[in-house]
Image (cartoon, rainbow, N blue to C red; front, side, top):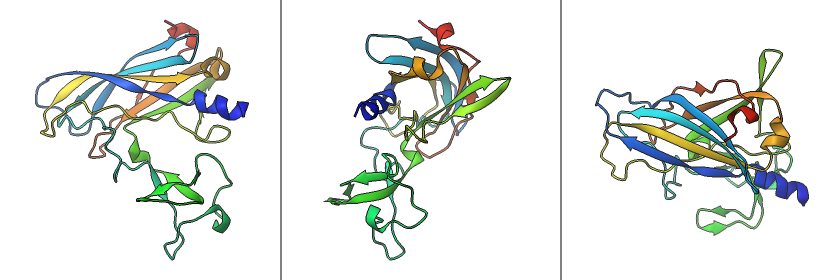
Length: 223
């Protein structure tokens, strides 16, 4: 129980704060981002790693609302057998993973029906609109620290809210400040030199360029 509770809190991701202004009209259709800053904020509860990126976008179709859960933004893709039946843990094929909190859900709501079983699912990456990867630098080489595998089976990818309330497209620019909350930043990275990669995606599933932070340690960016 302690391990599960710790992992859940460790990988909780907060929302993003966004500011924008009206720029010229010659902006790219796919979002364009540049790295802005990183801050590490320690508290008595969860610590925060906050990354800021500047963006430019021609249509302003950035951000997802809580109502954006239908395809292509649905959180999960339920796996089925060739006959169309859902893959349960009891009927899983040889290639299905062992039970974990990422690949299996218990009593999910499928459509309008609660299924009283454990169902194989695959995460839909398009439910997110901001993507974050972590890399540790050792001996001059970077190795990705992958939260999606064991023991965490989770991600720091997330969603930031719609920037424009209206559907009519217009060019925008501004800054996205994305906060990631964790009890484990210090225990995982300690004094390691790390960097992060960030990418965003608009509602037409156009991905931005990937931007990398400079190398840093947590103590160097502590606020």
